[in-house]
Image (cartoon, rainbow, N blue to C red):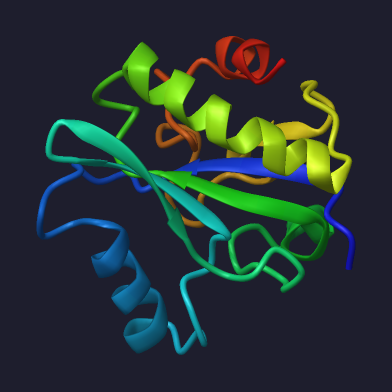
Length: 149
């Protein structure tokens, strides 16, 4: 199904060598029985630079936000880090925006708050409540969407 939205997530874990995109992929496959990680893209700090990690193909359904049909119509993008405890760096947001912008343009997804959603805009984390918003209370969605333009 055509992607019409982007749904932004965070891992809600500290980005470390043991808790990385690979560890999250392994957890999704082994613990949850998914065929792959639930997201389409991930942004992770590797050493002193950032990388975009590929997950599910863009034309495949995600496993990141079933509410409002977002697994089908939403491109799931996960930032490694816990942005309830820390703030993503401007460099991380700029890097992610520069890589996500052409993907969104090729898919015809507008760079606005109607189409770029926080996971918490769709649904709160199950069992965690409003004290654990996703992608974290320190992730500024307005700033990130502005960078996407």
